[in-house]
Each structure stands twice: as structure tokens, then as C-alpha cells.
Length: 210
View 1: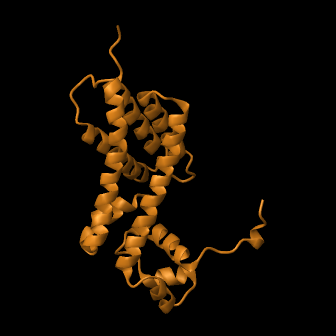
View 2 (view 1 turned 120 degrees about the vertical axis):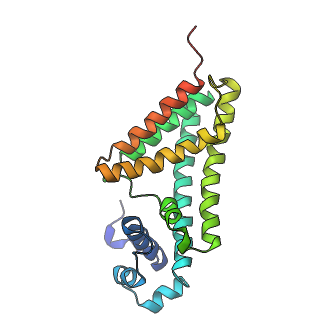
View 3 (view 1 turned 135 degrees about the vertical axis):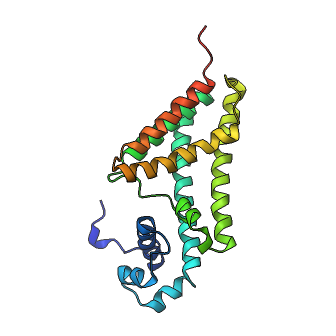
């Protein structure tokens, strides 16, 4: 293990992004000021503007980092699920179980969704930020739609269902579960919602009993 005293602090840009993410997820983008961020990081205002032209550019960086991290988590979890089963349905169910376990292991619950935070106040942002947000949502739809397509070729749905809607449902369940966990102070509610989605997928595709 590397001695903590020998570790270099992250670059200031990353420190600003980390501080901003915590603040934005806690109280929204409009409630987060540049002054509080420079105080949290310990830099001057000119130091902030060296890295970010304005708050919109900061929002863009925040969103890109958030989406990249979510994609990294999805890549890791579902690649491992594919290693554990070659059956497309079983692999997806394994991945969803692993996703629920990952979310359940967070010590204080999920901190929040940056995509949702920006969507709720999209009037504050320019078109580029809104387009990044939309691209993230559509990218997750495509990611899970591809898996559902593979499943449906082996296990035709037992009831008519839009695979796009079923793919979007995972994002809707995840974001709704984050809100639910925060309102109820129940950190286990998010992983439970993911597991319910998992059971719904199983019911849609599992063949009827003989």
C-alpha cells in the first residue's frame, strides 16, 4: 500500500470538479456558487477561471465526468456478467443483480444523478450542455436495447413490449430509486428497485412453464 503522505493531490481541475459535484448534487447548480467552490478547493477566483471559463463550462465538465464514470461502471459490471453466462437473458439478469449489489454497497446511498440535476434546471444551460445530457440518456437506451435485442432473439417477449421503453425503464427506475432513497432516508430502496426491474425483465422474457 502506498503511504498516504507520498501520494500527490489530484490536479486542481479535478478538485474543482469533485467539489462541484458534491455541491450540485446536494443543492442544485443554481445554489452552487463559484465562491464556495474556490473556498472548498483553496484557490483564487482567477485560479478557477484558469480551468473553467464560466459555470456553463464547469457544468459541461461535470456532466462528462459523471457520464464517463457511469459508463465505466456499466462496462465493468456487464462485461463480468457476460463472462459468467453466455445466455443473453441470464447474463443481463446477473448484471442487474451485480448492479444492485454495487449500489447497495455505497456507504450513504447514491449521491444523486447529475443528468437529472441538469435536466430539472435545463433553462440554466446552453444547448451544448443539454445535448450532452440527451446523448447520455440515448446512449444508455442504446446500450441496454442492444442487450434486450439479443435476449428477444432467444426468448421472444411473452407480452407485446417496446424494447426501447424497456431499456429506458432501467434509467427511470434508477433515477426514481435515487429520489425515493433520499426522501425516505432508506439507502436500500435504490437496489431494491433495480431488483424489481430485474424480476420484471425475467417475467417478460422467461418462457411459460410447460
